[in-house]
Length: 142
Ligand code: FES
Image (cartoon, rainbow, N blue to C red; front, side, top):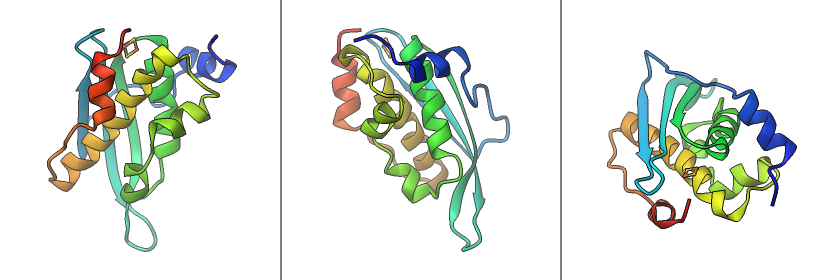
């Protein structure tokens, strides 16, 4: 499967790439198999109902094109969402928004999603447990 135009666009023009110096939560996850690394930064604010929302989000990744595209798309989807909704973003959501990813690149989207969950957990003071998806991803062949 070839990369979709959406994937290529996000790879060439990544959204929200960089570091958030005053982040309220940071999630870093890595893939020891291919050495890719994902870091998600979030700034948390309040919406009109007083619910915690992702006011700003940025990512840094040392990874492949799919990892960059998935992180970029994740930040676009998550920005403005309540933390509860952002925690429910699945890898399928990201892959679907990208118009699909080659099967062997699915684990790249898993890292982005897990990075966000870890950042939210850090903000909430919760213990982050890697999902089985991430564990599978670590054993995926890059
Ligand atoms: S995360 Fe391993 S190749 Fe993309």
